[in-house]
Image (cartoon, rainbow, N blue to C red; front, side, top):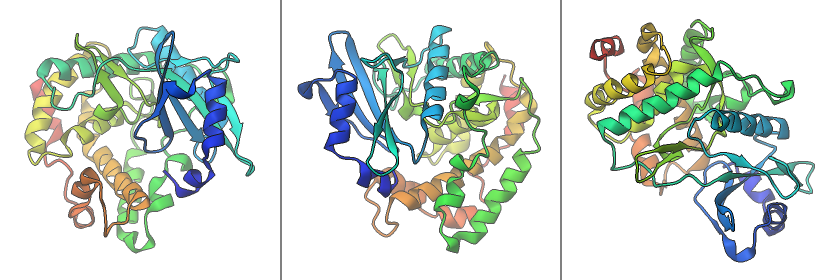
Amino acid sequence: MEQRIKDLFNEKILQEAMQKYGIKKNDIQILDSFESFIYEFKNDSGEYILRISHSIRRNHALIHGEVDWINYLADHGVSVARAVLSKNGNLVETIPDQNDGYFLATAFVKAAGTPPWGRWTPTLFESYGELIGKMHALTNQFEPLHLDRKRPEWDDPIFDYVEQYLPECDFLIREKYKAVCVHVNKLPKNRETYGLVHQDAHGSNFFIDDQGKITLFDFDDCGYNWFINDIAIVLFYLVTSTDEKAALTREFMSHFLKGYLNYFPLDLELLKEIPYFLKMREIELYAVIQRDFDLDNIEDSWAMRFMLNRKINIENNVPFIDLDFDSLKLLL
C-alpha cells in the first residue's frame, strides 16, 4: 500500500465506514492487507468483509464496476464472494478524506472455508480450472451497467506498476518489460481470447470449504486482458515457492486445463505465450516489492525469497519456468 494512503487513513474514517454498514465496535477486527484496509465483521445475517480503499488507486466508478461484475458472476452461478448493500442501499460508499480525495467502503460476504495452501490435490486443481473457465465463459456475456464503470484495459496506466515503482537504476529491466508488452499487444483480441478477467486469482484470493468448494474473492485488480494471462497468473503464484517449477507446472496444468476446458474453449496455441505473461508478472512484482519494502531489510519471508537473485535473473532473461509450454497440449 502506498504510504500516502496510509497517512490519510484514521480512526474517524473507519468509524464512518462502520456506521454506513451498521457495524458495532465489538463485531469487527482488522485483517492482513496489501492494497486496502481489510476488516472482518459479523452481524445477525452472517460474516462479512469490509474493504476500505482510496480514490488514489481506484475511483468510485471503477469500484462500482468491480462489484457489478462480481455480483453478475454470483447471479450466474460462479462461486465468488458477493458484494452486499450498505444501510443506505449502496454497493459502494464514499467517505471524504479532508484532503480533496475520498475513501471507498465496500462489503462482501465472507468466503466459507480456509486457504488452499497445503491442501492441493488433482481434484482441487481441476476444480480450480472449472472456476476460472466458468468465469471466462460468462465474461463474454457481461456488459458494464454504465460506460464509466467499465474496468481498465491491461495497459491502462492504473496497472503500470513498473513505470510507477521501478527505480531508475533498473533501466534494463524497464526495457525488457516494454519489449514483453510490445509482444503480447500483438496477440489476437476477440471474444475467444480476451475479456474482463480477475488478474489475481491466486491461492491467497480464494477459500475452500469442507466439501471442496472454492469461493473466489478480491477482484480489486480485475480488468480487460487475455484469458491466457489469467491462467498464467494462477500458475505464477502456485509455483513461485518451489524449486521444481517445471514438474509442478506439468502436474497442475494437466488437471487445471481439464477442468477449464469443460467450460471454456481455450485456444491451445496460446499456451506458448504463457512465458511472456509470467515474465510480465515477475517484473511487476519485482517493482511492487521495491515500493513496499526496504530491500536491505525485508522482513517478509515470501518477499525475501522472491527477490533472491531476481534482478540478475530478469536482466539475464532466465525463464520464470523453464518449460516448453507448447508441449502441455500433449497432456490433454
